[in-house]
Each structure stands twice: as C-alpha cells, then as structure tokens.
Image 1 (cartoon, rainbow, N blue to C red):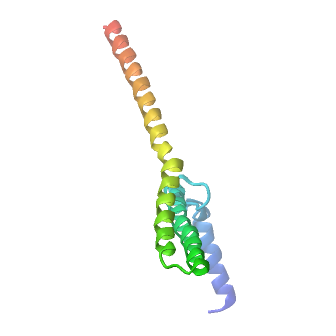
Image 2 (cartoon, rainbow, N blue to C red):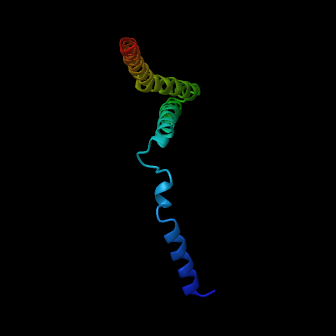
Length: 122
C-alpha cells in the first residue's frame, strides 16, 4: 500500500461520516458526566479529609512522641469529610425534591384545567 492509497481511503471514510466526531459524548459540560463529576468531588472531599487530618495526627505523633494521634486524625478526617459532604451536597436532594413537588403541583393543576375544558366541550 502506498501513502496515496491510505490517504484516499481515509478521505473517503471521512466523507462518508463527516459528523462522526460530533456524535460522541463530550467530557466537558455535558449532562452525562454530571453524575461522575459529583461522585469524584465527593470522593475527593473524603480522601482529602483523611489525608489532611491523618498528616496532622502523624505530625503530632512525631513531635510529641505519642502513638495515638495518627489513628485519631484519620478517623477525625473521615468524619469531617462526611460532614462536609453532607453539608455541601445534602441540600441538592432537598432542592430537587422541592422542584419536583412544584412541578407535580403545576402538572396536577394543568390536568385539572384540561379535564374541565373537556367537560365544557361536551
């Protein structure tokens, strides 16, 4: 195979499917990746809490000559990470459920009006 043959076959394939690259899901700003972004953010809060407070516990053990501050720091970091996750992301469920309840009440009102209109036409 020559370079011209390969180039011609690639050009032919590109002309057959010109928008193939646009059909693929995008990694930036798409709704499909929103859950993944949220999950990774939650995981990073949990890991960073354990690492930061574990490091503080290790430093305390190292300079004070004790052996119990590292496990306390790790557990405290995990607890603080869970606390931050609940404070930061726990409200999202409340907002979503409130918006869902509002949409359901609006939908019920529209359904009632539709039934009244159908009864009036008969």
